[in-house]
Each structure stands twice: as C-alpha cells, then as structure tokens.
Image 1 (cartoon, rainbow, N blue to C red):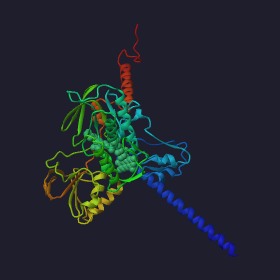
Image 2 (image 1 turned 90 degrees about the horizontal axis):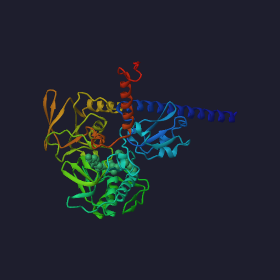
Image 3 (image 1 turned 135 degrees about the vertical axis):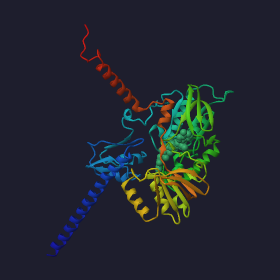
Image 4 (image 1 turned 120 degrees about the vertical axis):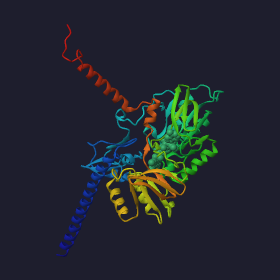
Length: 462
Ligand SMILES: Cc1cc2nc3c(=O)[nH]c(=O)nc-3n(C[C@H](O)[C@H](O)[C@H](O)COP(=O)(O)OP(=O)(O)OC[C@H]3O[C@@H](n4cnc5c(N)ncnc54)[C@H](O)[C@@H]3O)c2cc1C
C-alpha cells in the first residue's frame, strides 16, 4: 500500500513537471512568434551583417541555439524550427552554430547577390573602385577579431602593390584610413610597421563602435592578434579596459589620428584619390574605408546643435540624475533612452517627436511609455520639432506655437544614415547590383519583345 502511494506521488510529480515544461515551452514559442511579428514590422528581423543560416530541413527545433546566443534574442523557435527573429542584433559570435546538436546552423552572409548592403570585394578587400578598399564590419563580417584581421590584410595587400612610399611634394599620402575602430586602428598600425605614410580620420573618436557600448559592458573577444602589440591575453574585457588598450596603441605607436572630420566623398583616379571631408581634403594613393555599418547619426541641423550638451548616443543613464533632459526621436532607441533616463532620481525627461503619436515602436515599449506618460514620469511632446538649442533651455516648435523648456542635456536619437548611399556615390558595387542588372536586362528584353517587330511580338519578317 505504502509503495503504491509513493509511486502515485512520483507519477504525479512527473506529470506535473511535464505539464509545466510544455506550458513554459508553448509560452516561449508564442512569445517568439509575437517577437518575430513585431520585429518584422520594424525591420529589426533583417540581419545587417553575417548571421545564422539555418537549414530548416535539418533543424530539430530543440532551442539549444536560442539559449547559446550571447546577445539573447537573435533567434527563436517558430513552428518548431529555429528562425532569425532579431537579425539586426546578431554580431556573429557563432555560438549558435557551435551549440547546434545536429549541425543545422552556419554563420555567413547568405547569397550576397540578394544583398544591397554587402559591397563586392576582391579576396584582399579591394572594392570595384581601384584603390578604394574596405576593412571591418562594413564588409559584412562583424566582431573585433575579424575587423583587426581585415585591417591587417588590406594594408598588406596595399603594400604589395608597391609604388613610391614617400609623401611627395604633391602631398599625396600612401593611405588615408577612414574610421578609427578596430579595423582602422589595425590598418594604421600595419601601415606604420610597413613604412606607409598614413592618416586615420574619424568623425567621432578612437575606438569606433566600442565607444558606443553601454558603460561597463563585458566585451567578448575571440583570440585577437593586434599588429605590433601582439595577442590580447584575455577573452573578456570591460568596455573601459578595451578603450584603455586603444589609447595605449594610439600613444605608443604614434598613430596620426584626426578626430572630427566626417568623410563625405572620394573622388579622383587610381593612384591619386581625393578624400573629401567636412574639414578639408586629403590626397592619397589608396583609401581604406573602415566605417563600420552604423553610419552617421542623423542630425537636426538646428541652431545650437554643436553645443557640448548635445549627444547622439546614451551610454550611461545614471550619470544624468537630477538633470533636465530633452530626448529627440520617436523610435525604439529614443523611447528606451527616455524611459531609462526617467527612472533616474530627479531626472526630468521630455521626449520630442515630430509626429503626434508614438508609432512603429515595439508593443512592449509602447505600453511602458504610455504608462510612464500617464503617470507623469515622462513629458511627451508629440507633433513638435526642435527649433533652437541654447545653453540653459531649448525651444520647440509645437502645434500651437513655440514651447520653451529649461534644459541641461539633449539626446538626438533620430536614427542613423547608413553608409551605403555614400559608398554608391563613390561607385562601389554591391552584391544586389547583379540582381538589379539582371532585372534591368530582363525588363529591357521584355520591352524589346513587346515592341512592334520585337522578338516574340508575333510580327513576321519577310
Ligand atoms: C552593442 C554591441 C555589442 C558588441 N559586442 C561585441 C563583443 O562583445 N565582441 C566583439 O567582438 N564584437 C562586438 N560587437 C561588434 C564590434 O563592435 C564591431 O564588429 C566592430 O567594432 C567593428 O569594427 P570596425 O572597425 O569595422 O567599425 P566600427 O567599430 O563601427 O568603427 C567605425 C568608425 O568609423 C567612423 N566613421 C563612420 N563613417 C565615417 C565617416 N563618414 N567619416 C569619418 N568617420 C566615419 C565611426 O565614427 C567609427 O568610429 C558589438 C557591437 C555592438 C553594436
């Protein structure tokens, strides 16, 4: 009798555990489906660089890849198969592929003839424009170690092209490197090592995207061999530690880095290219574009935007306790920043958006923002545009006239301008151009065929 009761209890616990697991599993799957729907609406499902290519036939839907992803919400399980839900957050760690028990995932760029955001490059990194090279994340491959390796490869290929190496009387450098992120810094270090004359230009600061990481973010670095400095001894660094290493490289190897100029164009011919920037032009035999993929922050172009209190990225919300802050923008980044700031003690936050209502943001953000606005924790000013930024206040243009707000800090989070249009202006070809060329050829053939006397028009020649 006693053993029957024990068996019944064990059986009951077993059934309960299975039921709980199934419930949790179903809950997770339906939330994955909802996340996929939301991200498709906002375009966040689309990867920007390399991403997990999933063989749906081989995937068994176990979810191991989902748990293995260090970025947490890139993958999900929908209809019993792994899918990319938040592709824009994938930075190519490749942990999902390592973890997949059936080998159904590999990391890659997919078919680049379908990609309008992947430039066509030679194996060494030269673009379709002779003398213009690409290194780092702009090529589609993320991660610091890839960027460092590509920076080296490109400069070694440039050095192998030979040619004069002194800055001639014409002031033509061997290389202008655009971008002081991991790829640009690595390229600069190798250029110095190989005796190439070189300058690095960056609109923001040495460190590239790392500067934009949240404060004290733990950065995972795959084995990375820095030119001249050697291998980084650890696999994990705090953002601040990594920036200290950057600072050391800059100082110890005498890199010529110019912070501030934004490169706006590259003109000229092979061997004598002109790099146009917001602060003047540079001439070089080769140009290495190590721009990353984040592009330049969208500016408002209003009076006062150059004041030091204006920023285009929120890194450390805690530092703004007790401040009067204006956040400009209506996307997820602006709304998330505004809410994060509004949680800080004494921080008074106004969110200015040019449309009357917050739309096109994730459901979760929309609900949280609405609650904070209703509770008076966030001052939302819909239908407003920033007119002027002054040292102690801002003026907004509102539906009923100007609004003056006392102000200490301004965050303009109105999105970024991706670098692809800029590359196209230079003449750089993209993977998707091939598809477009085929489309144009097909359209022209169809047009010719439809024209009187055209092939297939039914018209007959004698
Ligand atoms: C939130 C986040 C977390 C990440 N975590 C990790 C991690 O843990 N481990 C890892 O290995 N990788 C991580 N990455 C990816 C890694 O940061 C990037 O792959 C790497 O920084 C790419 O280096 P890059 O040199 O190609 O470009 P970037 O680092 O993006 O640098 C590009 C530089 O070019 C400059 N620039 C752009 N346009 C112009 C212009 N027109 N004129 C002048 N300058 C210009 C920019 O100001 C910038 O400084 C993360 C990325 C993000 C966004």
